[in-house]
Length: 106
Image 1 (cartoon, rainbow, N blue to C red):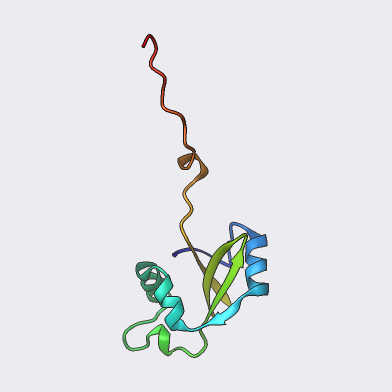
Image 2 (image 1 turned 180 degrees about the horizontal axis):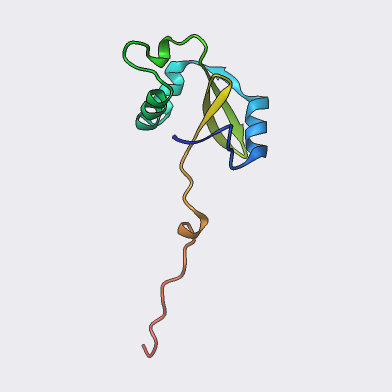
């Protein structure tokens, strides 16, 4: 799962409200095993975590799982901000299967 947004600027407010209302808390280990390590590392660095104080040592960070429209969504909460991870969904235009072109005069 990739990092897709935080609660400050959600692309879908209904989704955010639903996951916040229905999520269940999970362990950091489960969260880390399911999300992009590159995305998580970048977020941790941007939030000021380091080898001296890694995020896993912060007792005020929590990890959550919810479902929305059949899709599993994970997020962590840091300083009352939710950082949301989901499976990548390609744009609709790249998922349309067009028929092969018809050769003229064949």
